[in-house]
Amino acid sequence: MLTRVGDIYGIIGDPIEHSSSPQMHNAAFKKLGLNCIYLPFRVTRRDLKSAVIGMRALNIRGFNVITPHKTAIVKFLDGLDEAAQEVGAVNTVFNDEGRLIGYNTDGLGAVRALEEQNEDPSDKRIVLIGAGGAGRAIAFTLARRARSMFILNRTQRRAVKLAKDIERKLGKKILVRSLTRDSLLRTLQDADILVNATLVGMYPRTEQTVATREVLHSGMVVFDIVYNPVKTLLLSEAEAAGAKTITGVGMLVHQGAEAFKIWTGHSPSVKVMRRAVMKELSGS
Image (cartoon, rainbow, N blue to C red; front, side, top):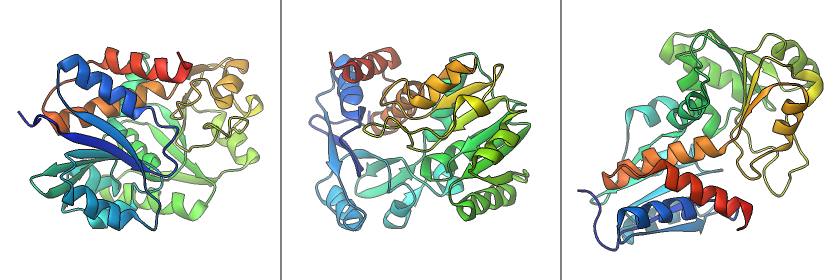
């Protein structure tokens, strides 16, 4: 058993106020009767190295990593698992007796979120918006299954680098386009699945969206990894276009459950974790 009485876990990022991970993990600890706690830590880009040193010194047992640190943190860790090494991004860190090991559960979380809604990404035409830390993990995972994949990003250079990394490591050709209305219209007309892997539309900027109903269509699936709010403007626009929608709650819960297993050796209740997230987001 990895868990010890009084172990402390957490999450680092900036901003951090929107995260429902503390409620989710603390509910899982309580359900399993584990005397542990999960806390949020706001860490700026400038303070990342110091924060990692502090996590090790304070013997924080494990922590999640969110924007903007998923790729930057790699150079401050002692090792990476296969997925994190392949992707070049980390969302989970385990303190193994003073050695900080990075993992990436984002890609697996995204696939499970799709599959629980009966949407198998295998042999599908997938369009991914975003080439940041979460986008990289999702791109690598879905590229293995997809028939084809387009990556669209505001900074095209970043998308090109991601596409080249995937081609070099997986031998899979990935197409890249800039994130404009015209390129969305051309790219999405034959798409089976659209994944928004950016934070566009996240609270408090809920009036923003990466795509509107005019470029979406019925018969496609629109999956937004943003979970606060649960129904983003993108998902509202997708519904208006007749598309099937998948919220970001599923990915949050499934990637969190995988992180929980890495840290504690226990399989948490996904149902309990989801209930805690929905309660937090509803304000009840």
